[in-house]
Length: 320
Ligand SMILES: NC(=O)c1ccc[n+]([C@@H]2O[C@H](COP(=O)([O-])OP(=O)(O)OC[C@H]3O[C@@H](n4cnc5c(N)ncnc54)[C@H](O)[C@@H]3O)[C@@H](O)[C@H]2O)c1
Image 1 (spheres, rainbow, N blue to C red):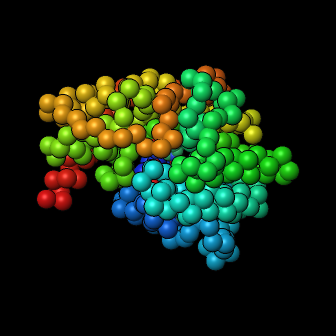
Image 2 (cartoon, rainbow, N blue to C red):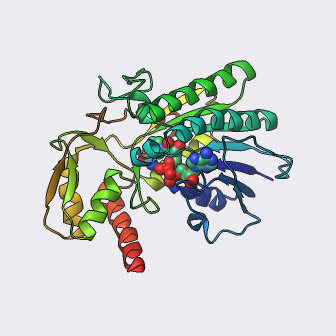
Image 3 (cartoon, protein in one colour):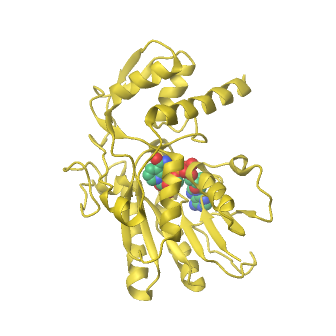
């Protein structure tokens, strides 16, 4: 019997990971989520025996006895607000989820001698002074700015994870996700992909922060989940850190053009000031993931966007 715990499994990336684990024949996936940004709707269709939904704030103590967990092979810790809109609104909650929450998840992994995967972020690099970023880069982070609640708590989570590895020999793997997109993103979470798609579909101008020359790279969610899955099943990777993202870099302005083109509307933009500490570039070096996870993104941006636009179109129509 193979059991995995996925914290934040009712969210965007987490729910796709749950789908994948079930499809790969995992016997039980236990989802811990307090639904602060996720929804059980994302797990609709899974049988409750196979996917157990436990409403729980990961910052509170975990009661595995009450949850009747007999064995756990894998813990994937994804529970954290993830978009700037959410982590500003939930700044302290974000800090606790990535510190206390990570501690609780690590303790349970230790008790069951389970493999542990930390869902970290490219934001640990802050506003990077080198591009592309590889895993050896320490970052350029403002520790007291408005993004610090996220960046610094993720960095703390990474440090804590590595200490569990050093002290207890826990088999941990850290994944630094760069921008990921796809169906089940929330329309209103303020990230550029749902923003542009929603605005294009509703006939609004697309909001471009700054002059639009800042770059981002976008990884489709099925590719992202493939990387998590490989990190979960491959032996011999304890203590390793991986960038997970698409190295194809684009300016925000050229991304706006692409979204307008795929939605089939003329490009109209409205400018807004750049948010504080907004990174000017984001581009992963994924050489290490290529070598050790046998992974690289496969879904072309146009195709991933087409699927994501269809998802948002269907949701907009359903809400009318
Ligand atoms: N989506 C991306 O582009 C991206 C990029 C970098 C890192 N990440 C990381 O990946 C993880 C998942 O992100 P996502 O995009 O799926 O976000 P999401 O908001 O869709 O999912 C996060 C999930 O965690 C849950 N959660 C938050 N705080 C919790 C708590 N205290 N207790 C229990 N559940 C809690 C939410 O309800 C939600 O279901 C996060 O850790 C995020 O930091 C995501």
